[in-house]
Amino acid sequence: DAGVIQSPRHEVTEMGQEVTLRCKPISGHNSLFWYRQTMMRGLELLIYFNNNVPIDDSGMPEDRFSAKMPNASFSTLKIQPSEPRDSAVYFCASTPRGTGGLGEQYFGPGTRLTVT
Amino acid sequence: AQSVAQPEDQVNVAEGNPLTVKCTYSVSGNPYLFWYVQYPNRGLQFLLKYITGDNLVKGSYGFEAEFNKSQTSFHLKKPSALVSDSALYFCAVSGGSNSGYALNFGKGTSLLVTP
Image (cartoon, rainbow over all chains, first blue to last red; front, top):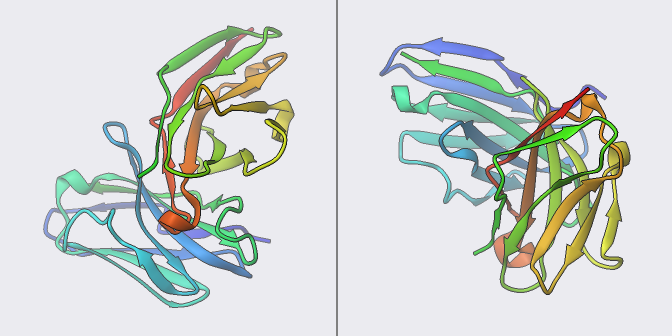
């Protein structure tokens, strides 16, 4: 099993540009989570999906952020327009089907985003 | 709403000594508690969880944690620390179905084990 796959691993962009982060969860997992990690704020849950449906997006900072999960094997997190304060490491995680939502979350390696 | 607190930013331990990383929680209803570890430039890895049952939970790499309801704590422990245990440790809590099973993580505690 390849684990949770995230791309790109590193992204450097200029303020105002659109950024799209991608995540492929582990096959057979039906819950997917997007987190953001910064030194100042720690690890924050942005949004999570269950069976491709967004369940809670209250952690999404503002309208510049959007997330989609068009199918069970793919999710995107988009920032448009990006700002320097969006610089962080963004993690995607998934949990296995049948664990009732309390299963182990498997984290991807993260995408380190730098907005200049 | 549920939350956890990790009161120590850093814990220093000599190799071979026991280690404890502290965590307290706040949740309405039954708590579901987790510990994760993060090595540099890596994603988080699951160590252990408490859902119900025995208050002493054993996990990966020789770690264990004790659920204490009266003190609302879930401290992570290991009898004998290894240098390779040096990493960032996160406690997390879920409120279960009341919150859609989302996890709230603490700020993290950096563990440094010296030879």
